[in-house]
Length: 64
Image 1: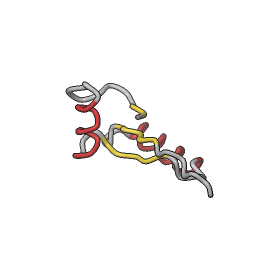
Image 2: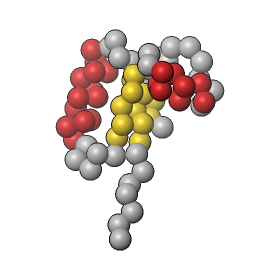
Image 3: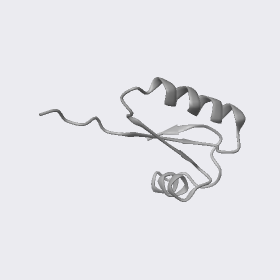
């Protein structure tokens, strides 16, 4: 019996070309499909950031 790896959430700026390119690269390299991606402009990304005490638009990429 194998234990599924925990997923890691990458929260990024969905309006940033550099962030989009980084997400595309990470998605290609993530062969075990551990990473999940969500923009901070979306409902899930915003809720995760607020849950971690981060309010307002982030100035970076966050990994939770």
